[in-house]
Image (cartoon, rainbow, N blue to C red):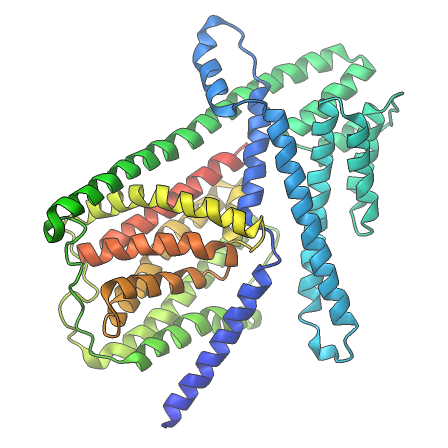
Length: 507
């Protein structure tokens, strides 16, 4: 065995350990999908407060009834109860892990105690926000004892910020019988609550204090916010629904055509045509281990630790730019390794890294996007049941959701909708999938490359949905034989996700 092969095996083991550790750590982190659902619930609560003022608002009334469904308050309570239980279970699990690590005689056995304590702090902050809101929902339904108990449960956590405890005290005061008002109640509510929850608490406070003018102004503002929330919900619900409906029709037509026409159907186009691959498995592993996994998890992070580049600065523009720069550096490093690994095989056989502007790549990409949406949605629903709100998520999604800066949003878009599709499709569909056809069938290569594509995102909860998306990307590429098609599909997918997040997170 050569020295190069031994070194490659050692680096592969290192990449597997690093990736496996990252995936395992994501197991105890909450899914972004859970937080996204709470955002949507908050907007629904805002929208349900809207009341028709005249006959011209019939269209909004129809939208309100169609989008909100029956009993939005009951649905919101269930959402927040499930979120509270999930966070409490995560805290219990992480605290047990920390206690086990601290009791170990070997101090080196503690798996990054600083990271664990940071996760605990983030979860406790999230739990406080959830319980404050859950209590308001319960109080709004007249379940005052349950609300009081929910707010009291915050005192069990010693590291909860005093601001949250003070807010719970204020809320308990204005809903208790007899009520109790504190001098700074309004300031506390305005600082620590938002959207429908802040408005609901302030209305309760103003009613107790008999501040009729402030109450009238607040109710007017509430109606304006409710109208905006309805508009957001209409966009978020309508566009994906129409796209998924179109995609379902496309899938049915393609499947029927496949049954009727067989190998002459669109889905059968190039389905059995394999690439002529001049390199072996060592080159494949070299590109992915050295160029992708180690570049993204070891080399670039270590380089960022040495360079005076701010991370987690608190400035959303700087953080967004840092993410873009690090991603571009990983992409440049990985593509450089790819180039020098296969350079000696130039010129490459037909269909390798093919970009053809004058083919039907646009239709393949658009049709693939429509078809992918219902497939991934169904897989995601199953995935949610399996993971129960755990398994981690891409941190970029939460940053995009919570960002209020247009410049930062533009940078996020450049990263997710331009840089990511170009780089990831070049690597996973352009190189990996065709290379694997030397050892397996086209369908086997599609599935294997999709699994690796999903695992590369280092979140357990995203593996199933991203594998489903990767399969559609692979089918689009193998049938079109044009990298522009999966790149366009990938860009549409990320753009649609970001657009929904921007709408949800916008004021």
